[in-house]
Image 1 (tube, rainbow, N blue to C red):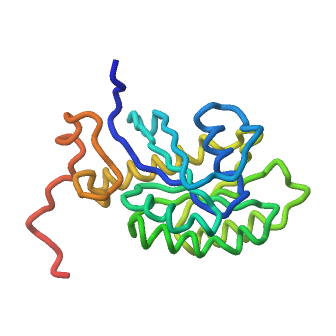
Image 2 (cartoon, one colour):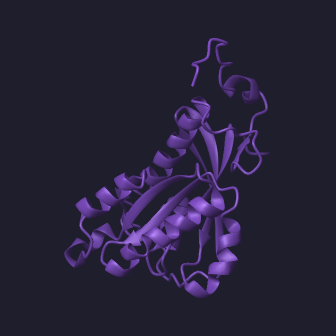
Length: 210
């Protein structure tokens, strides 16, 4: 039996090596912690159907390797992504300092309209924290991103991160800021009847002179 969903969104999980990206994806898909996690080689893939904003949304999630030597491979997967989790490790200042580089890549290679949520992972290791909640929150605000601290170990805020990102994309579709019909939007209709329903309303002919 084929899966039924309203929309399909292409998602990325990006960030430096060792931040727990694969563990976040595994926790989201399987609802358990990935014990024997090695560094991702190239790209790994997972998918899950969620309910967001009253719509059924299938997330196609590409978990990219964080190591520099795989960068040329992983960058090709950015194209046409609608959403991304940008992950750093709250116990590693180095992974936090690399965020600007990852953010630039996402907005340049995927789409300027990509919806990104910043995830400070390893919240369970609060005693070893090197990055404060406040400074990361400020960084997210300055760069127009949502922000959550997550724990791939306990599952805290992992599902919420994906849901928040998906809700934001749905909101942009409803407002007409994102068009699922546009090539490379990272969004597809699952149910063809939605095409008529979700199209933004026709603008009034009395337009502002600007």
